[in-house]
Every structure is written in C-alpha cells, then in structure tokens.
Image (cartoon, rainbow, N blue to C red; front, side, top):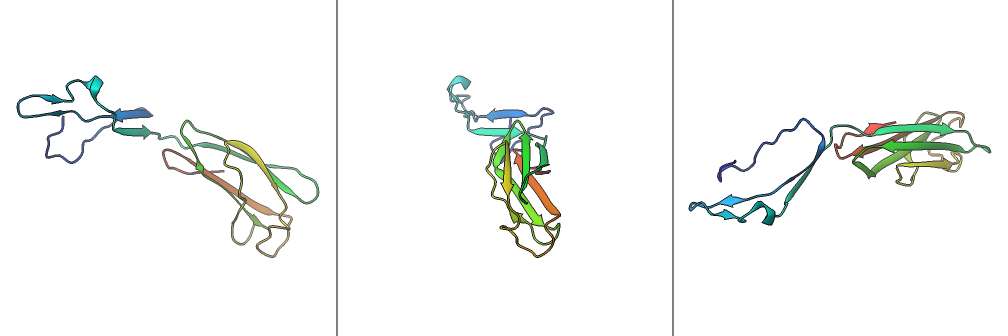
Length: 141
C-alpha cells in the first residue's frame, strides 16, 4: 500500500486485460473511507493491450481503370478513429488519403485518374493502411 507522500504506484501484470483501480484512505485513527470497498468508486481504468491489430489489406480487380482494395482488421481493443488508408499514383510522389469508411472490414473503390496528385503512369499504384489498438502501436498493411 502506497504512503501518502508517494505520488504514484507501480502495478505490473503479465496478462493483457482491463484493470480498474480505486482509492481507499485510512486516517490516523484507523478509519477507512469509504468504509467498505463495495462503496468505493472505480476511478481509474487501465487497458493493457500489448498485441497490435492484425491487418489484412488486399487489392481487388475492377473494370474501367478503377482501383479497389478490401481490408479486415482484428483486435480486441480496436480504435477505428486511427484507421488511415493512403495511396500514391505510379508508386511515386506523396501519399494521399483515400477517405475510407472507418470500419473493421470493408472495401474502397476509386479512380486514380480523378484523384491524381502526381504525374506518371497509372499502371502501378502504392497503397498502405494503418490502424491502432489501445496499445497505440500502429500496424501497417
């Protein structure tokens, strides 16, 4: 149990899980507040997640010069707000956002000729994706 002068406590675990912590104080007379743990509020939630998301990113064949990709992302604590799909034309130049839906599994079809940012052949395209779990360790596909 930490002393009142300590500003933090160490907690170590060898298992990924969600852990809740609460504070219960003891005064100099030995009285506890709150009187029982059942009356205590959980005030700190910590998610230990050491495994990065599994990302599968695959091109799809399409007609008429369009390009398509499908993806599936698996993670127990997936943060879809971090999902990013980017492309570049001709495998060169700057990466541009595809603005894909933030879904764990979906596909995106686009026409590089209308989203072209750099000159060059349309025969080759670069594609990359990223999403994070609560471990905040981005996994690229």
